[in-house]
Image (cartoon, rainbow, N blue to C red; front, side):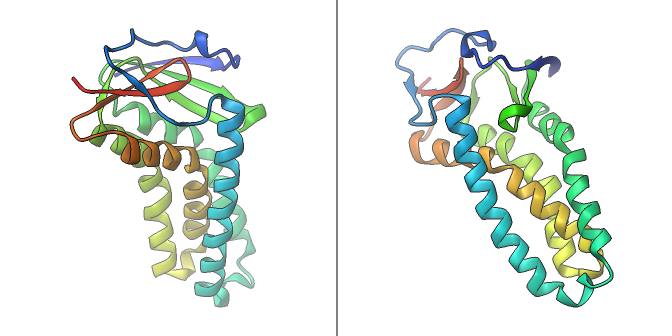
Length: 192
């Protein structure tokens, strides 16, 4: 994997690196642009965070009083893992990977022109959410005195909403044995 930092995404899908279309490729039924994806991901993120915060407050209610600083530290730590989150996506690629930001729409993402199997695509999509979200959340819920880990998990899991959307699309639209790739802003699948 070779990472290239491209800076701010200019909202022009034609500027994203991509390979050639594969014969018989089928476009995913998904958001048509970053604006629509931003709305979907942000609404999903909000729902996830509300549900998980309720769970944390129920489980950790005796530790919250006097430990509000842990909630703040956990939330701030989730911002610190934005780029490491994308780096974990990037390590799942074999070739060139490009990192973009678009803070106005709340999006940080990586793209690569290579194709990948459904399983590798799902792993690539979920890996950072497991490492920075699920694992800290579980530890924080098991040991409420580590409330900051639970809050890191809450925020990091919520911030992965766009990834869950991609996983859902891959699992529900790609047939067995299919491969996927990104072309401009949209994902495609094809049978090799």
